[in-house]
Length: 400
Image 1 (cartoon, rainbow, N blue to C red):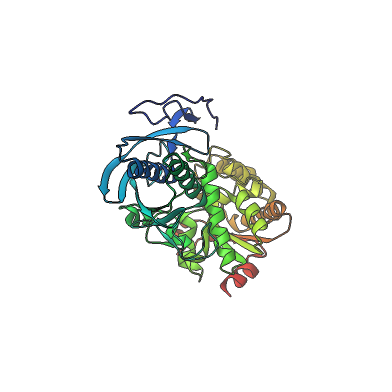
Image 2 (tube, one colour; image 1 turned 90 degrees about the horizontal axis):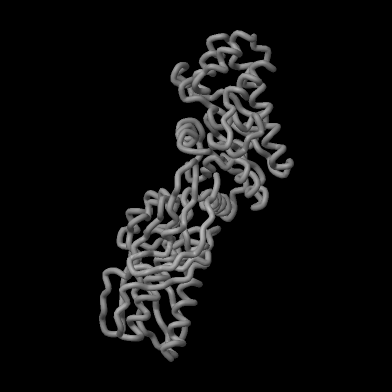
Protein backbone atom coordinates (compact mmCIF):
# COMPACT_ATOMS: atom_id res chain seq x y z
CA UNK A 1 0.00 0.00 0.00
CA UNK A 2 1.33 3.42 -0.93
CA UNK A 3 -0.10 6.75 0.07
CA UNK A 4 -0.05 9.75 -2.23
CA UNK A 5 1.24 13.10 -0.96
CA UNK A 6 -1.40 15.69 -0.43
CA UNK A 7 -1.61 19.36 0.47
CA UNK A 8 -4.43 21.38 1.98
CA UNK A 9 -6.60 22.79 -0.80
CA UNK A 10 -8.79 25.85 -0.61
CA UNK A 11 -12.54 25.33 -0.46
CA UNK A 12 -15.29 27.06 -2.35
CA UNK A 13 -19.04 26.73 -2.47
CA UNK A 14 -20.06 23.33 -3.78
CA UNK A 15 -16.78 21.69 -2.75
CA UNK A 16 -16.09 19.86 0.49
CA UNK A 17 -12.39 20.58 0.85
CA UNK A 18 -11.39 16.97 0.16
CA UNK A 19 -11.05 17.27 -3.61
CA UNK A 20 -7.25 17.02 -3.53
CA UNK A 21 -7.05 14.28 -0.92
CA UNK A 22 -6.67 10.66 -1.98
CA UNK A 23 -4.78 7.46 -1.30
CA UNK A 24 -3.33 5.12 -3.90
CA UNK A 25 -3.99 1.44 -3.15
CA UNK A 26 -3.23 -1.34 -5.64
CA UNK A 27 -2.74 1.29 -8.37
CA UNK A 28 -6.16 2.79 -7.74
CA UNK A 29 -6.66 6.39 -6.64
CA UNK A 30 -9.26 6.40 -3.87
CA UNK A 31 -10.99 9.48 -2.45
CA UNK A 32 -11.01 10.51 1.20
CA UNK A 33 -14.33 11.08 2.97
CA UNK A 34 -15.52 12.41 6.33
CA UNK A 35 -16.85 10.64 9.41
CA UNK A 36 -20.25 10.57 11.08
CA UNK A 37 -18.56 12.60 13.82
CA UNK A 38 -17.66 15.37 11.37
CA UNK A 39 -21.22 15.32 10.04
CA UNK A 40 -22.60 15.66 13.57
CA UNK A 41 -20.22 18.51 14.43
CA UNK A 42 -20.90 20.40 11.19
CA UNK A 43 -24.68 20.01 11.54
CA UNK A 44 -24.49 21.18 15.16
CA UNK A 45 -22.39 24.19 14.22
CA UNK A 46 -24.69 25.22 11.37
CA UNK A 47 -27.85 24.81 13.46
CA UNK A 48 -26.36 26.71 16.41
CA UNK A 49 -25.20 29.54 14.14
CA UNK A 50 -28.68 29.92 12.65
CA UNK A 51 -30.28 29.74 16.10
CA UNK A 52 -28.04 32.39 17.68
CA UNK A 53 -27.79 34.79 14.72
CA UNK A 54 -31.09 34.33 12.95
CA UNK A 55 -29.15 34.17 9.68
CA UNK A 56 -29.13 31.48 7.02
CA UNK A 57 -26.19 29.03 6.79
CA UNK A 58 -26.24 26.99 3.61
CA UNK A 59 -22.62 25.90 4.07
CA UNK A 60 -20.54 25.45 7.20
CA UNK A 61 -16.76 25.31 7.67
CA UNK A 62 -15.35 22.71 10.04
CA UNK A 63 -11.78 22.15 11.23
CA UNK A 64 -11.12 18.42 11.71
CA UNK A 65 -8.59 16.87 14.12
CA UNK A 66 -6.75 15.59 11.03
CA UNK A 67 -5.97 19.21 10.13
CA UNK A 68 -8.17 19.18 7.02
CA UNK A 69 -10.77 21.92 6.80
CA UNK A 70 -14.16 20.89 5.44
CA UNK A 71 -16.91 22.97 3.89
CA UNK A 72 -20.18 21.04 4.04
CA UNK A 73 -23.68 21.84 2.86
CA UNK A 74 -26.44 22.17 5.46
CA UNK A 75 -29.56 20.32 4.32
CA UNK A 76 -33.21 20.09 5.41
CA UNK A 77 -33.02 23.26 7.54
CA UNK A 78 -35.99 23.64 9.93
CA UNK A 79 -36.70 26.50 12.30
CA UNK A 80 -39.00 26.68 15.30
CA UNK A 81 -39.08 29.18 18.18
CA UNK A 82 -35.85 28.60 20.11
CA UNK A 83 -34.89 25.58 17.99
CA UNK A 84 -33.08 25.00 14.67
CA UNK A 85 -32.26 21.67 13.06
CA UNK A 86 -30.39 20.68 9.91
CA UNK A 87 -28.54 17.72 8.41
CA UNK A 88 -25.19 16.95 6.83
CA UNK A 89 -24.92 14.14 4.30
CA UNK A 90 -22.18 11.60 4.96
CA UNK A 91 -19.61 11.06 2.21
CA UNK A 92 -17.31 8.12 2.95
CA UNK A 93 -15.22 8.78 -0.16
CA UNK A 94 -14.18 5.48 -1.70
CA UNK A 95 -14.28 3.58 1.59
CA UNK A 96 -16.90 0.77 1.61
CA UNK A 97 -18.88 2.25 4.50
CA UNK A 98 -22.54 1.33 5.06
CA UNK A 99 -23.24 4.84 6.36
CA UNK A 100 -22.25 6.48 3.07
CA UNK A 101 -24.95 8.87 1.84
CA UNK A 102 -27.03 8.96 5.02
CA UNK A 103 -27.99 12.21 6.75
CA UNK A 104 -26.84 13.05 10.28
CA UNK A 105 -29.19 15.56 11.94
CA UNK A 106 -28.51 18.00 14.75
CA UNK A 107 -31.32 19.84 16.57
CA UNK A 108 -29.99 22.72 18.65
CA UNK A 109 -32.09 24.51 21.25
CA UNK A 110 -31.53 27.16 23.93
CA UNK A 111 -31.57 26.20 27.58
CA UNK A 112 -30.97 28.03 30.83
CA UNK A 113 -28.32 25.65 32.17
CA UNK A 114 -24.90 26.76 30.98
CA UNK A 115 -22.71 24.57 28.80
CA UNK A 116 -23.14 22.39 25.73
CA UNK A 117 -25.33 19.36 26.44
CA UNK A 118 -25.12 16.60 23.84
CA UNK A 119 -27.65 13.78 23.59
CA UNK A 120 -28.95 11.31 21.04
CA UNK A 121 -32.27 10.74 19.36
CA UNK A 122 -33.78 8.47 16.73
CA UNK A 123 -31.27 6.15 15.08
CA UNK A 124 -28.34 6.84 17.43
CA UNK A 125 -27.43 3.71 19.35
CA UNK A 126 -27.37 3.30 23.12
CA UNK A 127 -24.50 1.47 24.81
CA UNK A 128 -25.75 -1.51 26.85
CA UNK A 129 -22.53 -3.35 27.73
CA UNK A 130 -19.25 -2.33 29.40
CA UNK A 131 -15.95 -2.16 27.54
CA UNK A 132 -16.82 0.47 24.96
CA UNK A 133 -15.66 4.07 24.86
CA UNK A 134 -18.91 5.41 26.33
CA UNK A 135 -20.39 3.85 29.50
CA UNK A 136 -23.55 1.71 29.50
CA UNK A 137 -26.70 3.80 29.28
CA UNK A 138 -25.03 6.51 27.20
CA UNK A 139 -25.67 7.31 23.58
CA UNK A 140 -22.95 5.93 21.30
CA UNK A 141 -21.51 9.34 20.52
CA UNK A 142 -17.76 8.98 20.94
CA UNK A 143 -15.48 11.45 22.69
CA UNK A 144 -13.84 13.09 19.66
CA UNK A 145 -17.17 14.02 17.99
CA UNK A 146 -18.36 15.32 21.37
CA UNK A 147 -15.21 17.44 21.70
CA UNK A 148 -15.61 18.77 18.15
CA UNK A 149 -19.20 19.83 18.84
CA UNK A 150 -18.33 21.42 22.18
CA UNK A 151 -15.37 23.33 20.74
CA UNK A 152 -17.31 24.77 17.80
CA UNK A 153 -20.38 25.72 19.83
CA UNK A 154 -18.42 27.25 22.71
CA UNK A 155 -16.55 29.42 20.23
CA UNK A 156 -19.83 30.43 18.60
CA UNK A 157 -21.42 31.32 21.95
CA UNK A 158 -18.44 33.57 22.78
CA UNK A 159 -18.65 35.29 19.41
CA UNK A 160 -22.37 35.98 19.91
CA UNK A 161 -22.03 36.95 23.59
CA UNK A 162 -24.45 34.17 24.50
CA UNK A 163 -23.99 33.10 28.12
CA UNK A 164 -26.70 30.47 28.59
CA UNK A 165 -26.60 26.86 27.43
CA UNK A 166 -27.30 24.89 24.27
CA UNK A 167 -28.76 21.43 23.93
CA UNK A 168 -27.70 19.35 20.92
CA UNK A 169 -29.76 16.32 19.93
CA UNK A 170 -28.24 14.14 17.21
CA UNK A 171 -30.38 11.79 15.15
CA UNK A 172 -30.08 9.50 12.14
CA UNK A 173 -33.45 8.57 10.61
CA UNK A 174 -31.97 5.49 8.88
CA UNK A 175 -29.79 4.55 11.82
CA UNK A 176 -31.83 1.77 13.40
CA UNK A 177 -32.00 -0.24 10.17
CA UNK A 178 -28.40 0.49 9.16
CA UNK A 179 -27.08 -0.66 12.53
CA UNK A 180 -28.02 -4.24 11.64
CA UNK A 181 -25.25 -4.14 9.02
CA UNK A 182 -22.58 -2.95 11.46
CA UNK A 183 -20.72 -4.38 14.47
CA UNK A 184 -23.08 -2.57 16.84
CA UNK A 185 -25.43 -5.49 17.68
CA UNK A 186 -22.38 -7.66 18.53
CA UNK A 187 -20.89 -4.90 20.65
CA UNK A 188 -24.06 -4.29 22.64
CA UNK A 189 -25.04 -1.00 21.03
CA UNK A 190 -28.80 -1.03 20.50
CA UNK A 191 -31.22 1.03 18.48
CA UNK A 192 -28.93 2.70 15.98
CA UNK A 193 -25.49 3.52 14.67
CA UNK A 194 -22.57 5.13 16.48
CA UNK A 195 -21.28 8.66 15.93
CA UNK A 196 -17.61 7.94 15.39
CA UNK A 197 -14.28 9.28 14.24
CA UNK A 198 -10.93 10.16 15.76
CA UNK A 199 -9.57 12.32 12.94
CA UNK A 200 -12.83 13.49 11.37
CA UNK A 201 -11.66 12.04 8.06
CA UNK A 202 -12.34 8.65 6.47
CA UNK A 203 -9.33 7.19 4.69
CA UNK A 204 -10.29 4.50 2.16
CA UNK A 205 -9.76 0.88 3.17
CA UNK A 206 -8.53 1.99 6.58
CA UNK A 207 -6.83 -0.94 8.31
CA UNK A 208 -6.60 1.14 11.47
CA UNK A 209 -10.40 1.31 11.65
CA UNK A 210 -10.70 -2.47 11.30
CA UNK A 211 -8.10 -3.12 13.99
CA UNK A 212 -9.86 -0.62 16.25
CA UNK A 213 -13.16 -2.50 15.86
CA UNK A 214 -11.43 -5.79 16.74
CA UNK A 215 -9.96 -4.15 19.84
CA UNK A 216 -13.45 -3.04 20.87
CA UNK A 217 -14.74 -6.60 20.58
CA UNK A 218 -11.84 -8.01 22.59
CA UNK A 219 -12.19 -5.38 25.29
CA UNK A 220 -15.91 -5.96 25.56
CA UNK A 221 -15.37 -9.69 26.05
CA UNK A 222 -12.81 -9.00 28.80
CA UNK A 223 -15.09 -6.45 30.48
CA UNK A 224 -17.86 -9.09 30.44
CA UNK A 225 -15.59 -11.37 32.48
CA UNK A 226 -14.41 -13.65 29.68
CA UNK A 227 -10.67 -14.34 29.70
CA UNK A 228 -10.79 -17.37 27.37
CA UNK A 229 -11.90 -16.41 23.88
CA UNK A 230 -12.75 -17.99 20.53
CA UNK A 231 -11.52 -15.98 17.53
CA UNK A 232 -12.40 -16.53 13.88
CA UNK A 233 -11.10 -14.68 10.83
CA UNK A 234 -14.54 -14.47 9.23
CA UNK A 235 -17.79 -16.07 8.13
CA UNK A 236 -16.40 -19.55 7.37
CA UNK A 237 -15.12 -19.84 10.91
CA UNK A 238 -18.38 -18.62 12.35
CA UNK A 239 -20.34 -21.16 10.34
CA UNK A 240 -18.03 -23.95 11.58
CA UNK A 241 -18.55 -22.79 15.17
CA UNK A 242 -22.30 -22.69 14.69
CA UNK A 243 -22.34 -26.31 13.52
CA UNK A 244 -19.67 -27.85 15.74
CA UNK A 245 -18.82 -25.89 18.89
CA UNK A 246 -21.36 -25.45 21.73
CA UNK A 247 -20.87 -21.73 22.32
CA UNK A 248 -22.89 -18.66 21.43
CA UNK A 249 -21.61 -16.75 18.40
CA UNK A 250 -21.82 -13.62 20.56
CA UNK A 251 -18.81 -15.01 22.43
CA UNK A 252 -16.70 -15.25 19.25
CA UNK A 253 -14.51 -12.38 18.06
CA UNK A 254 -13.94 -11.80 14.33
CA UNK A 255 -10.37 -10.79 13.54
CA UNK A 256 -10.40 -10.63 9.71
CA UNK A 257 -6.81 -10.82 8.41
CA UNK A 258 -5.27 -9.30 11.54
CA UNK A 259 -4.16 -12.44 13.38
CA UNK A 260 -0.99 -10.89 14.82
CA UNK A 261 -2.59 -7.61 15.91
CA UNK A 262 -5.39 -9.58 17.58
CA UNK A 263 -2.88 -11.59 19.61
CA UNK A 264 -0.97 -8.42 20.55
CA UNK A 265 -4.14 -6.66 21.72
CA UNK A 266 -5.34 -9.73 23.62
CA UNK A 267 -2.07 -9.87 25.56
CA UNK A 268 -2.37 -6.16 26.37
CA UNK A 269 -6.00 -6.49 27.52
CA UNK A 270 -5.32 -9.42 29.83
CA UNK A 271 -6.84 -12.29 27.86
CA UNK A 272 -5.58 -15.61 29.24
CA UNK A 273 -6.43 -18.02 26.41
CA UNK A 274 -7.38 -17.76 22.75
CA UNK A 275 -8.62 -20.46 20.41
CA UNK A 276 -8.53 -19.59 16.71
CA UNK A 277 -11.02 -21.43 14.51
CA UNK A 278 -10.19 -20.99 10.84
CA UNK A 279 -10.43 -22.40 7.34
CA UNK A 280 -7.09 -23.85 6.23
CA UNK A 281 -6.86 -21.34 3.38
CA UNK A 282 -6.38 -18.58 5.92
CA UNK A 283 -4.49 -20.31 8.72
CA UNK A 284 -1.98 -22.27 6.66
CA UNK A 285 -0.19 -18.92 6.40
CA UNK A 286 0.21 -18.82 10.18
CA UNK A 287 2.09 -22.15 9.90
CA UNK A 288 4.67 -20.12 7.99
CA UNK A 289 4.78 -17.28 10.53
CA UNK A 290 2.53 -14.95 8.48
CA UNK A 291 0.19 -13.00 10.75
CA UNK A 292 -1.36 -10.50 8.32
CA UNK A 293 -3.12 -12.92 6.03
CA UNK A 294 -4.53 -10.72 3.27
CA UNK A 295 -3.41 -12.05 -0.11
CA UNK A 296 -1.81 -8.75 -1.09
CA UNK A 297 0.56 -9.01 1.87
CA UNK A 298 1.47 -12.67 1.54
CA UNK A 299 0.18 -15.65 -0.38
CA UNK A 300 2.40 -18.68 0.17
CA UNK A 301 -0.37 -21.17 0.91
CA UNK A 302 0.81 -23.93 -1.41
CA UNK A 303 4.47 -23.41 -0.55
CA UNK A 304 3.80 -23.71 3.20
CA UNK A 305 1.43 -26.67 2.92
CA UNK A 306 3.78 -28.46 0.53
CA UNK A 307 6.80 -27.84 2.78
CA UNK A 308 4.96 -29.34 5.74
CA UNK A 309 3.89 -32.30 3.64
CA UNK A 310 7.53 -32.85 2.70
CA UNK A 311 8.60 -32.82 6.36
CA UNK A 312 5.81 -35.33 7.04
CA UNK A 313 7.34 -37.67 4.46
CA UNK A 314 5.14 -37.11 1.42
CA UNK A 315 6.89 -38.16 -1.80
CA UNK A 316 8.09 -35.74 -4.47
CA UNK A 317 5.54 -36.49 -7.24
CA UNK A 318 2.65 -35.61 -4.91
CA UNK A 319 4.50 -32.54 -3.63
CA UNK A 320 4.86 -31.30 -7.21
CA UNK A 321 1.16 -31.88 -7.82
CA UNK A 322 0.25 -29.99 -4.64
CA UNK A 323 2.30 -26.99 -5.78
CA UNK A 324 0.11 -26.79 -8.89
CA UNK A 325 -3.17 -26.89 -6.91
CA UNK A 326 -5.29 -23.78 -7.21
CA UNK A 327 -6.70 -23.86 -3.68
CA UNK A 328 -5.84 -25.37 -0.33
CA UNK A 329 -9.04 -27.43 -0.58
CA UNK A 330 -7.63 -28.99 -3.78
CA UNK A 331 -4.33 -29.74 -2.05
CA UNK A 332 -6.17 -31.28 0.91
CA UNK A 333 -8.04 -33.54 -1.52
CA UNK A 334 -4.76 -34.70 -3.07
CA UNK A 335 -3.32 -35.52 0.36
CA UNK A 336 -6.51 -37.29 1.39
CA UNK A 337 -6.55 -39.47 -1.75
CA UNK A 338 -2.91 -40.41 -1.14
CA UNK A 339 -3.54 -41.28 2.51
CA UNK A 340 -1.14 -38.54 3.64
CA UNK A 341 -3.54 -35.97 5.04
CA UNK A 342 -3.41 -36.90 8.72
CA UNK A 343 0.38 -36.93 9.07
CA UNK A 344 0.68 -33.68 7.08
CA UNK A 345 -1.87 -31.90 9.25
CA UNK A 346 -0.10 -33.10 12.41
CA UNK A 347 2.99 -31.27 11.16
CA UNK A 348 0.98 -28.20 10.12
CA UNK A 349 -0.67 -27.91 13.54
CA UNK A 350 2.71 -28.16 15.29
CA UNK A 351 3.97 -25.22 13.24
CA UNK A 352 0.81 -23.20 13.85
CA UNK A 353 1.11 -23.75 17.61
CA UNK A 354 4.79 -22.79 17.51
CA UNK A 355 4.17 -19.51 15.69
CA UNK A 356 1.14 -18.59 17.82
CA UNK A 357 3.21 -19.03 20.98
CA UNK A 358 6.11 -17.13 19.46
CA UNK A 359 3.88 -14.16 18.61
CA UNK A 360 2.34 -14.08 22.10
CA UNK A 361 5.73 -14.64 23.81
CA UNK A 362 3.98 -17.34 25.81
CA UNK A 363 1.97 -14.72 27.73
CA UNK A 364 -1.36 -16.28 26.77
CA UNK A 365 -2.35 -19.79 25.78
CA UNK A 366 -2.97 -19.79 22.01
CA UNK A 367 -4.44 -22.74 20.15
CA UNK A 368 -6.20 -23.42 16.86
CA UNK A 369 -8.71 -25.65 15.11
CA UNK A 370 -8.34 -25.77 11.33
CA UNK A 371 -11.00 -27.08 8.97
CA UNK A 372 -11.97 -27.45 5.32
CA UNK A 373 -15.61 -27.23 4.30
CA UNK A 374 -14.99 -29.31 1.18
CA UNK A 375 -13.29 -32.04 3.21
CA UNK A 376 -16.32 -32.11 5.50
CA UNK A 377 -18.70 -32.47 2.58
CA UNK A 378 -16.75 -35.39 1.14
CA UNK A 379 -16.68 -37.19 4.48
CA UNK A 380 -20.08 -36.10 5.80
CA UNK A 381 -18.38 -34.72 8.89
CA UNK A 382 -17.42 -31.45 10.51
CA UNK A 383 -14.53 -30.82 8.12
CA UNK A 384 -12.00 -30.54 10.93
CA UNK A 385 -8.48 -31.16 9.67
CA UNK A 386 -6.50 -30.73 12.84
CA UNK A 387 -6.13 -28.97 16.16
CA UNK A 388 -3.18 -27.86 18.23
CA UNK A 389 -2.22 -29.91 21.26
CA UNK A 390 -3.72 -27.37 23.68
CA UNK A 391 -6.94 -26.72 21.75
CA UNK A 392 -9.07 -29.14 23.77
CA UNK A 393 -8.03 -27.57 27.08
CA UNK A 394 -8.70 -24.02 25.85
CA UNK A 395 -12.05 -25.02 24.38
CA UNK A 396 -13.02 -26.60 27.72
CA UNK A 397 -12.27 -23.33 29.53
CA UNK A 398 -14.32 -21.37 27.00
CA UNK A 399 -17.33 -23.68 27.26
CA UNK A 400 -17.23 -23.49 31.06
